[in-house]
Image (cartoon, one colour):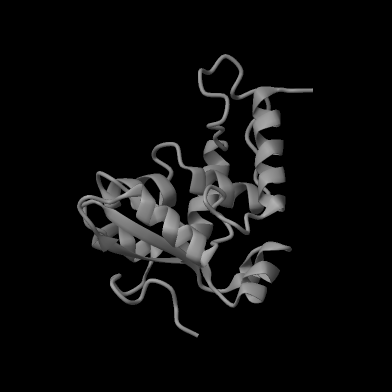
Length: 178
């Protein structure tokens, strides 16, 4: 089986290596899990069924380093990917942590949980990328439709309902919804 993104994308490197290898230019990126069995059911099973290790595709319209490394892998700023991986690993935001906040979707995990998620990412994920200026959302959408990564919901014809459910649970908890 052909591994997605090998043609036109750089070679894969670990999440830890990405800290020193990912460029600051715009482009597209892919996140892979080294062993699908590291994910709880049904996520690892879905990867096996789909015969892939690709879990996420993203776009960086300004900086691959800023988007992929700082947001998605290190969670220095809000990240859909980080919220998704944290929630499927069983982490939950502090109850009521979004009360009074303007954005009622960008829940965060506790500092201790964030550190544990980053450690898990560093031990289990690899990435690759392709520089592209401009990086177009239509291209990202095409990649997501073609490869159907389990952690992408937008543009994904095979979005994972269990992911939507745990993310909704996290939002309700952080909003202190009854």
